[in-house]
Length: 140
Image 1 (cartoon, helix red, strand yellow):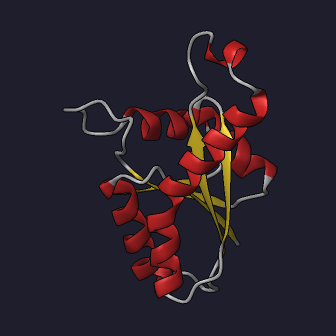
Image 2: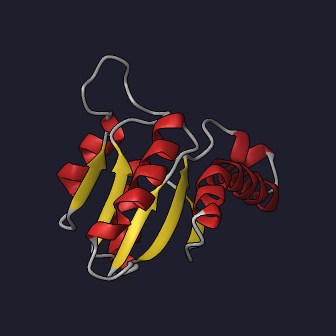
């Protein structure tokens, strides 16, 4: 079984990873875990003014920063994982990545950095649920 854990570095995202680790006993076999951070594309004409290699480096650095708390939690639990940083519209990239990697499940927090305050379900999580044909487990 392959599980995608999209993370954004928020407290809710990190809590989802920690709760997922605690939930692993409920799986028949410990799944292969893939951590993913999706960086939003830079707005405006910045990409015309800055070398594309620098933009790529920026996204990678920011993505790795956002992934680090989740990686620390996985390391502390002694769990193997892979990780990636990608750029694009967050919900669409999560679903695309899960499909491309042959994931059997997407596990994510119900709210993160991009969530609209006051909503019961974050806008990213809501959109992933709508777009995905892969089962989505939301951790509150």
